[in-house]
Amino acid sequence: MKHFRILTMIALAALLTAGFTACDDNTTDPVDTDPVLAAPTNLKAASAHGAVFLSWTASFDENESNFGSYKITVTNNTTGETLAPRTAGKGINSIRVDGLTNGVRYQFTIRSVTDLGKDGTTFATIEWSPAVRQNTDKNGLPIKVYATTSTMFNSAIDLYNSNGDAEVIPQIGQIFQDRGDLYVHATNSTSAIEIISPDNANNQGLETQFSSATPLALDDLDGQLAAEPPASATYSIKKLTVQTGSATAGRVFWGRIIRGNDMYYFRLLVKKGSNGSLIQGSGNDRYLEMAVSFQNAPNNPFAKH
Image (tube, rainbow, N blue to C red; front, side):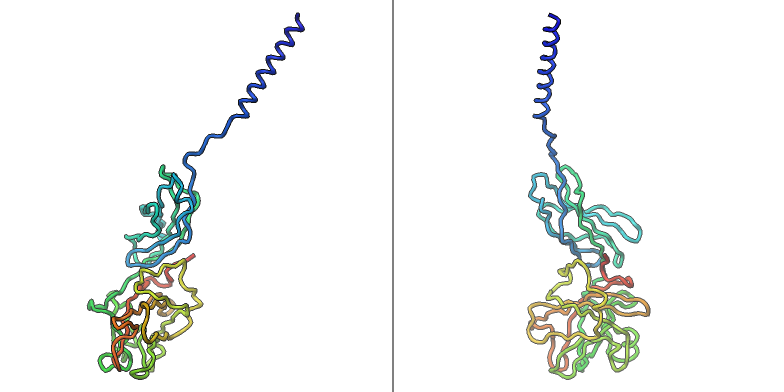
């Protein structure tokens, strides 16, 4: 009888063990109802006046049911201060970040956020600066720089004068030598037109270097978003030849002016005129109309990686 009881207890123990094992086999891990989302990619930027434009390629998780928005964190790289984050909704792939200081470098970091507020663990980041935008001259007029053949006003331009304005100045004399950043040259009334560094003029002026990077066909400086600026080594030429004839759009060039040991970078838009050409006016009095994005902080080529 005793042996029977022992065998019975062993059998019960085996049944209980089998039951627990069966329960363990059917156990599943809890489902994550709010998984983290992948970051957007291909982050690019462009300088605006007191602002920076950003664009990106959408996260491949944007169609997930828990996708909420994109969060952009902005950090002042000089002070370390983090500004209030910006938000872009689902389906948005660009934003203008306002309230910034021209010439200051900011770190922009973007990540995806779930609709419950969980930040993604991956992100895209870029460093960029806003820049002074010169759309008119110091008198509020269009920036028109006439060729050297002009009998009206053969002219040059000071991109950022002592008041922070663009100023059209004569392409002659001491003012040009002291303050000219570039001028427009033509040999005669029908020849090609060139944008030239003043130190290449007969009455030697200051030095400006242009990038050999291919100019972009754009009508607005706001549309020129990039992952980085042209490499420093590309700023190797002293003159640019402006396309003659009809143009599909304006042209954006890169340059930097040399002031002692400092370099001041700029983007130059030559606008397309109502005549469908980059070169406006006629005969000796041909001219270029310009707009400029100018970095007023030295040695700041818009971005740094």
